[in-house]
Image (cartoon, rainbow, N blue to C red; front, side):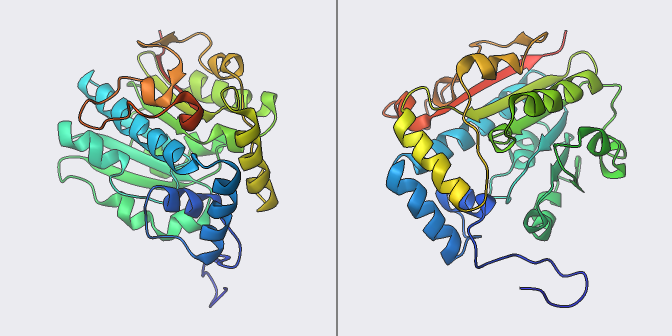
Length: 270
């Protein structure tokens, strides 16, 4: 679907991971090909919808807690389609003055970026089109440097992103660059797909994504924990997403580790 010069090709005839995720979250920015792709994933991993929503709630709880701990600058890499409530909506409930930079390499996300820029008047949000696999360019983007003060702590979020960067060295190199670039007191929040609780179902879902043209790599607890090397994990450390400071007002007590299928963790730079 290409219109005039400068238009974005949304490729509505093929399933897209961001729109599939939006569908799992109950969003409206998805199309028949995305719903078909999501259906194929759910056919082999019926808990895909539960896993996506547990992951999203982990994001909400983690950034809310970091705001309560005093963080006021947030960098969300691999933003995806802005299914509300977005990160800035969560943090600015507690800290209206908070600043947030969203980044993604997907032109589909760019078409929805305006929804990410509706900041509380006391705060600020910005969107930078960039690829996590080129963290140096991302960290030097004018949208980022013009919004965040990189001499002060930044809360970096890599939510459900790194499993879309296959190759152990590549993903870990990306994370190490970000860790080196951020000042002391910064935090790192990650969630990541794992096959450790139900290998057959999760690897079936991986196959469904790959059939749709999106490579995915599930990782073990050990591989996941390596992302935090040298930083201090916050309580309760590495755990399954729905077990990280569960919210009594959003009951996830019936969700199993196999259904959540993602590890989550938050760490602070010494």
